[in-house]
Every structure is written in structure tokens, then in C-alpha cells.
Length: 94
Image 1 (cartoon, helix red, strand yellow):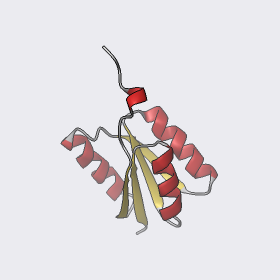
Image 2 (spheres, one colour):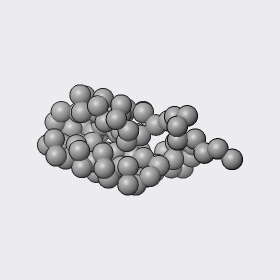
Image 3 (cartoon, helix red, strand yellow):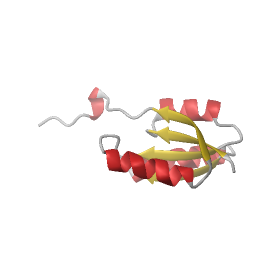
Image 4 (tube, one colour):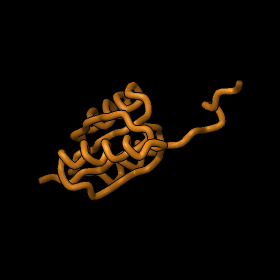
């Protein structure tokens, strides 16, 4: 069974860390928005990584449990890169 890196948050920082620590591992990219997860996965795949994606809401226990369950089907989770967050530039103003 292969080792798995779980990347939570598909932004530039998380992507850079995942690239650095995931050589020879499957990478599961989870993000609140599937389009962001897909874009990060494309970058990783182009660099030669084995990648899959999923949506995840870090504010939801059930969503995190789903991420763990899905990631576990790919192998043994040996690394987690938690880079999900909200910057002030992406916060909606009422």
C-alpha cells in the first residue's frame, strides 16, 4: 500500500509544501472549491505526482471525516499539509 500526503487548501503555500514533502507518495488535494483542487492537482500531475482531489470544508467534522476516509483508500496517510485559510482579500464585505 502506498503512502499518502493529504493537502488541505489548494493555494500556493500548501502546493509548495506538498511538492516538497510528497515525492513517491500519492497526493490527495482537498479544497472547499473543487475548481481550486483541480487546478492544484493539474500542477502536481504535470510535475509527475500521482494525485486525486476532493472537496472539503474544514469547518465541518463530517467533511473532514470524509476526507480521511477517501484518502485512506489510496494508502496510509503519512503526511498532512493543512494550508486552508481565508485571507482578508477573499473575505466578503456585507
